Amino acid sequence: MRTRILFVGLSVALLGLVAWAAFKDSDNRGYIAIQTQYLKDYPSSDFNVQVQQLFPSFPQATIEGDTYRVERCISCHVPDIGTIGPVEAAKRLSEGFLKYEPNAKQLAAEYHLTLIHPAYVSATGSNYPPSMSYQQYGPSGFTSFTYTPYTPPGAPAAAPVTVQQPGPLPSFLNPSTNYGTSGTPTGELGIDQIGCIVCHNGNRLGLDQTDAHQNLVVNPEYSFTEGAQLYYLNCARCHGGQGEGGAGPPLNNQDRLGYFNEDYYYRCIEYGFTDFEHYGSIMPNWGGIAADYNPVTNPPGPGVVENTSPVLTQTQINVLVQFIRHWEDYSTLP
Ligand code: HEC
Ligand code: HEC
Ligand code: HEC
Image (cartoon, rainbow, N blue to C red; front, side, top):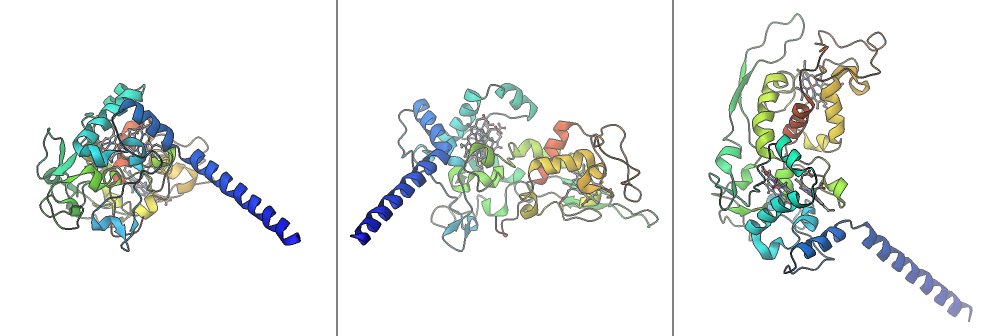
């Protein structure tokens, strides 16, 4: 009798726990509401609202065979990409963005968006089907720059260095050799196979909109052309031609960059040595001077350049943050 009561009691407790977990689970999946909206917008779509996970199919995206670099952007954006295909999905990505964003026009202008989303990576790019040019944005196509490394006070001047900036598209997306679903080279890769994070570098584990959008690189083209120029003009002499570091720390370590959010990097560039995290360093302040900075208690590093008025605008700093986020190293774990 005692054990039976205990058994029933425990069973009820277990059921309660399961119900609570199920409730929390559906409650925490912010994308379900957006999928429901998607179904209203595209009523002919056919997909299971509860289960939408899409993983990149190229071998570099997998870790130890069956574990993936997480790809959840698709849960909200185009959950039926598998049935509608990359061209239609790319069209919906651009249209959907305009549909619900009240400031879409302003944002598009500010970030120089074309509102034409690439559906593929192809050898030279094209307008239809829209594709991103591997020749232009792959690792060897991008412009070459020259810069002069930083010279510490009193040291002999360093010689100028010429570098070739690798584009945002990693080498394994080369359309002449890249991988399809089978793992064998098949030519052009669509955005579904590439996986959103290869170009967008968002928070790989984020399940809700805010988390997934952390560290988002919206527009590789814009941040690459303008970002690269700003970087070589102002930053390369201390942080290296490929972000490998020098007088300043490396900026091409995504394991470190991904750990801090964009705000941290924004403030570092805006306030440099005048903000508390970087007191006493030689990192210049490219925007303002932090409100609580006191040069007497926290003197700047040797030979530092203090900018009394902003050298870079807020938009330029944002472009730089996006630009340095492109140094993604796919040989390390997320
Ligand atoms: C929980 C749902 C959800 C997830 C997950 C999600 N998004 Fe979004 N995303 C949205 C919505 C809704 C918008 C519409 C614009 C807005 O209000 O921000 C949007 C807008 C965007 C934009 C337009 C520009 C901007 O910054 O607002 C980009 C780019 C984008 N998402 C990319 C991604 C990528 C890449 C991922 C995965 C790392 C992702 N999204 C994951 C819901 C989501
Ligand atoms: C081949 C690189 C690449 C891939 C892969 C990629 N994007 Fe984009 N995405 C871009 C570029 C470039 C833009 C900026 C387009 C522009 O100029 O408007 C962009 C813009 C966007 C926007 C803003 C709307 C727009 O058209 O400007 C959203 C939303 C978005 N992407 C979501 C996604 C999602 C979700 C995925 C995965 C299905 C994805 N992207 C995969 C390159 C890519
Ligand atoms: C005179 C040399 C110098 C120049 C020029 C310079 N930096 Fe720095 N930067 C540094 C130093 C030194 C640090 C380290 C500060 C610290 O750790 O306290 C740093 C730190 C940073 C960090 C934080 C890195 C981290 O891992 O915490 C970022 C981001 C950064 N710089 C971006 C830039 C950008 C963008 C530019 C160009 C606009 C730039 N820097 C120009 C010297 C420089």
